[in-house]
Image (tube, rainbow, N blue to C red; front, side, top):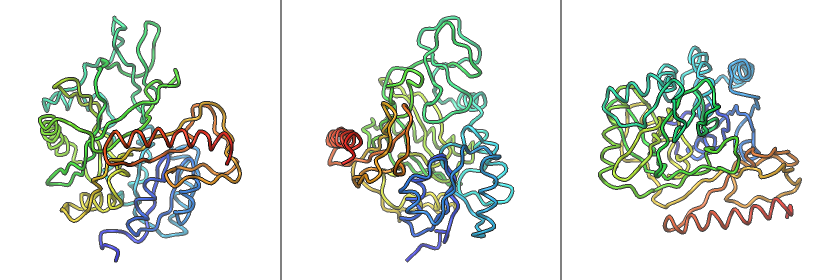
Length: 366
């Protein structure tokens, strides 16, 4: 029986909507999706899909209008990709009920100067950063004002000049925490280990993958929970969000908040949409069952130009599947893989095994 919290049908908007579509379908909610890829598994699960060139308002407005006219929907869920186009949320909010953070909250989170100033005001530790080019070029990262998935981040050197800001590089573990925020409380869903795909010099900090149930010292968990309590109240966060941070020794350094459902949500079971809806409606409780099995998600990028075989049979653990005959350029994502196991070591072993199987599959088409 479908929960009264779950809408009958939702509009989902994201750069890649497959994960959110899957979450909705798993919860008994039909979906109309607008995204930039319209992968084959997204098309199979969604009631209707609309492919767009970007999430800029000018590029999606016609599709949004069509969804309203054809399906009469009034509620939407958004995912990654709007970081580069936060103004799109403002337009959407005029006519749609957004299930998640408001456009104002999303804008404030994306304001880097304001975000780090707020961290300072809340006494939350973060890496040293400056908004004018540092005199020394050692151990600085140049980061764009708007971006997601590590795109545009690079090490600073003497010739760098860009419209962005500089952050001191910290050597350590790259971690995140998935959490649900309501008006009155914050619930930590799980800590995750992240890694980059540094095969391409143009994007050396591009998001590569993430593994759930990361081992994090209790003292750090307590510190992060305290930070989230203050940040969630300060920004009026709602629903599922994630916070990225670096762990160096006994110190953690907050990097950013992803004020929308993040990739780690697909690693904690099939009921995470319910947790998002509970938090959004200020009704958090323990009724949502979360997966306790360690798992990982990894994006597979093209090492060279790839043409997807016409009759390729994808393994069940492959998601974000490109359409037959699609051409994927070097450095672009081909698909993603999800692995699970009894412990983190087994998860990573399975992930590496699946990578080898997939590489052979794409090479032979068999």
